[in-house]
Amino acid sequence: MNVLVVLFVSAVVSSCSRLGSSAPRLLLVSFDGFRADYLETYNLPHLQELIEDGVLVKQVTNAFITKTFPNHYSIVTGLYEESHGIVANDMYDPDAKKKFSQFNDSDPFWWNEAVPIWVTNQQQRNGTSAAAMWPGTDVRINNTTPRFFMKYNFSVTFEERVEKIVKWLNSSDPVVNFATLYWEEPDVSGHKYGPADTENMRRVLKQVDQHIGFLTSKLKASGLWDSINVIITSDHGMAQCSPKKLIVLDNCIGRGNYTLIDRSPVAAVLPKHNKKYVYNLLKRCDDRHMKVYLKEEIPDRFHYRHNKRIQPIILIADEGWTIVQNEAPSKHAQVPETLQPQGFARCLDLYPQAVSSCVGDHGYDNTLPSMHPFLAARGPAFRRGYRQSMINNVDIYPMMCHILGLTPQPHNGTLSHTKCLLADQWCIHLPEAIGIVIGGLLVLTTFTCIVIIITKNRVASPRPFSRLQLQSDDDDPLIG
Figure 1 (cartoon, rainbow, N blue to C red):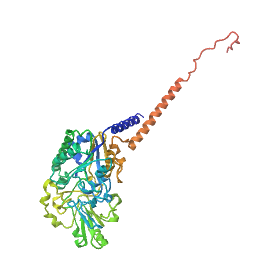
Figure 2 (spheres, rainbow, N blue to C red; figure 1 turned 120 degrees about the vertical axis):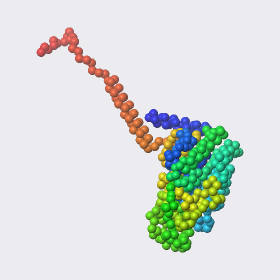
Figure 3 (cartoon, rainbow, N blue to C red; figure 1 turned 45 degrees about the horizontal axis):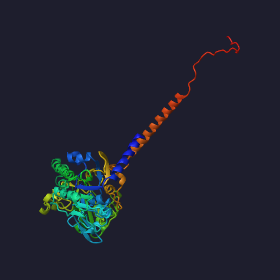
Figure 4 (cartoon, one colour; figure 1 turned 180 degrees about the vertical axis):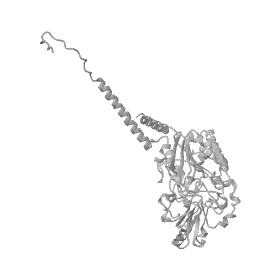
C-alpha cells in the first residue's frame, strides 16, 4: 500500500510540474546506422552520461525493409512503410510511371501519403519546426516544409548543423519547439569497414560520441539543456557482409525478363512480361540464402504488402548475403569521386554496383538484432535512470506527439509501449502489479492477524481459583 501511495504522489507531482512548466520542446537526433550493441561494445562516455540522466531503450525494432529513407519516415509518421509510401531507397510507381531515388527525392508526390510530425506541429497549436537534413524535410509535404530547414548537403559538418539548430532553437521568431538533426555516421563507416572491424569502428564511434558531447555542450551553453527534451536514435543497424557471399541472379534468370527496381539485400523485381514465369525461375534458383515472395505472399509480420510501390516479386537475402546480377561488374566498380566527400557514398545504399567495396550492409529482416538501433532520451518529459528492453520505431511518433501536446495523425504505433519512459505517465508492469497485489494481501493478512491477537488479549481472563468463604447462614459443608 505504501508503494501505491508513493507511485500516486510521484505521478501527481510530475503532472503538476509538467503543467506548470513552459511549452515543451523536443529535439530528435538520428545517427544513421547506429547498431544497438555498439553501446555495449564501445566506450561512449558522452552518450552514457545522457543515458544515466534519462532513459534507454536497448533495442528498437525498426520497420521492414531496414533501410534509411523508409525508416526515417516511419519514425516521424508512426507508420509502417506500406502505409506511408516510402517503401525503399529506390522506388517505382506503376500508376504514375515515376522513379524515386536518393538523388531525386524532392517530388512531394512520393511523400504525401503521410503527414510527418513537423507538419502536424506547425498545423496545431501554432508550433514551429526546424530541421537539419533529416530525410524529407526539404520537401513540401502536404504543401508544408519546416519553417527553418537545411537542404541536404553532405559537405556540411556535424558542428555546422548543430550550430544552426541551436540558433533556431534559441533565437528564432517564432520560437522553434520541434527540431530534427541527422548525421551520416556510423552508417558510412559501417558499410566501408563492417561492424566486425572493431578497430576502425571504435575510432568512428569515438567521433560520434564526441559529436554528442558537442551537441550537449552547445545546448548547455545556450541555456536550453534543462528545458529541452532530446531523443537520440537511429534508422537501422549493420550486418557484416562478404564479397564471397553473393547471390548471382544471372545464374538464375536472363535480364531481359525483368527490371531490378531496388537492390540488395531486399531486391524489388518488376517482371517485364509473365510474372509467374519470372517467379518460377527465381524460385528454382539453386540458392539457399534467398527467399522469393510474390507480393501477395509476403509475411504479415513485415507489414510490407499493401502499397502499389511494392513490386510484384520481392527477394530477401539471408543476413550477410548480397544479391547481385553478375559478379563481374562489382570487381572493378569504383564509387564516383563526387560522392566521396564525408564518405557519403553508402556503397549499396547509394551506389549498388560497388559490392566489392562494401563489407557491411543493412536492409535485412527486421527481427535480426544486427538490424536494430537503440533509443536514448533525457529532459523534463523523461524519467531518470530508466531502462527498457525494446519498443517498435513506430512507437516513437505517438510518444513525441504526447510530449509536444499534439493530436497525432492515424498511425501504427502504441503510446502504452513508451509510457514508462515518460515522467508524467503512470507506469506499472504486470510483474510489478502482481507484486503490489501480493504485497497488499500480505499487509492486510498481517494486519488482520494483529487485530485478532489484540482482541483476544482484551477478553477478560477467568478469576484465579480461591476457596469459597462460608456465610453464617450456610449449611455445614460436606466433609468427605
